[in-house]
Amino acid sequence: MSHPLGQDSTVIPWEILPEFALGSSTSTGQSLPSLAAQGRWRDLIDHSRSSSSQIEGNKLTKVAYCALALAKTGLPDDAALEIASVSLSDPACPFALHWIHCLLPSLSQNIDESINRFYTLLDSPIASTHSRQRRITLCLCSFFIQSQRYIPALQLITTLLKHAPQDPLLWSQLGRTQLMMGDVTAASKSFSTAQSTARQSEHSAGLLAATKDAVLVKFCTTHHHQGAQHALPDLQLAYRAHPEDVEICNALALCHLFSGDVAGAGRVVEEGFLKYPLEMLDEIIVGNLVNVYNLDAINGEARKKSMVGWLAAVAGEDFDVSVYGR
Image 1 (cartoon, one colour):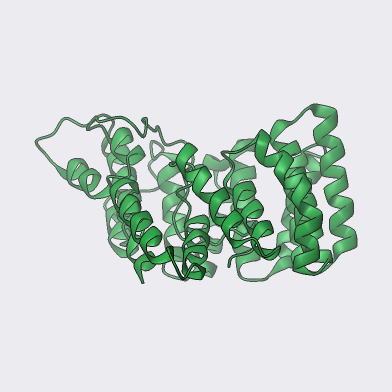
Image 2 (image 1 turned 90 degrees about the vertical axis):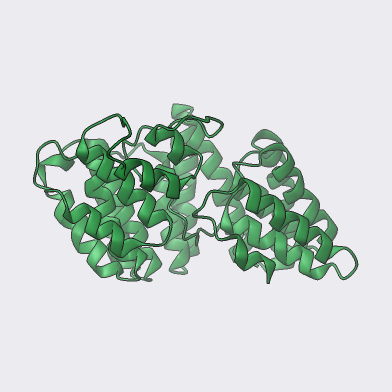
C-alpha cells in the first residue's frame, strides 16, 4: 500500500499547470478548456490541429493545449515537437507553454533536464512575479525530493521562507522534507510553526496541512499499528470536516487497514468515491482501494471489476485504467 500521504502519481495535476483557462468537468462543449476539463485529450489534439474549426485564442494558446494533451496521453516527444513549432522567445508566449516545455523531460525520466529548464525559467523575465517564482521554486523542490536530493530542496524552501516567513504551507513543506531526511525533531518544530502561523492568519489550507502533518509525525514516530491507533481520532475529525480531501481519505483508510480493519478501509474509500467521484480520481487512492479488494477473497474480484468498469467510463484519457484490472 502507498504511504498515507504520499504523492507518487504520474498524472499531471491541474494545480501545477499555471494560468490555463479551464472549463467545467461537466461541460459538453468543444472549446479547448472544456475538452481539457473533461479529460478528452485525443479530441483536444484533433480539435486544436483542425484548420476548419473555429478555436479561441492564438496559435501559441493552441500549441500550449495541444502539447499538454500530448503529454497527458503519454507522448512527451510529440509534445516537444509541437512546442518546437513555435518560438518560446516570443513575448506573447503564454507562461503555461514555458511550463510544459520545462516539465516534458521529467515525463521521460530525465528529471535533471527539467530541473535545468526550470532554473532557466526562474531567471527569465516571464517569471518575474512572486507567484510564478514561488510556483517554479516549489516545483524544483518537488523534483529534488523525488530524486532524494533533500539538501537543495531545503535550501530552496528556506529561501522562500525568508521572503514569506508567515506562510504556513511553506513551513509545512519544510517539515515534510525534514521528515523524509529522518529529522523528526526539526520536522516537528517546523510543523508547530506552520500550525501557529496558520492559526494566527486563519489560513484554512494551512490548518488542513497542519492536521495532515500531525498524522505524518504519528506514523513516522511509532510502529504502523500504534501510529494508526494514535492518528485515527484526529483523522476522523479531519475527514468529517473535509471528506473531499484525497490525502485525508487515503490516510484514514490506511489507519483502518493498519489496525486490521480491512472492511473499514474499503468502506472509507468507497464512500469517498460515492460522494466525490471526480476528486477521488487519484492513482494512489484508486490503487489502494484495488489492493483492499485483492485482500477480500469472497467479493473482492467482483468489486474490483465493477470499480475498473466505472473508472473506464468516467476517468480522463490520461488515467491508465488497465493497470488496475491485473
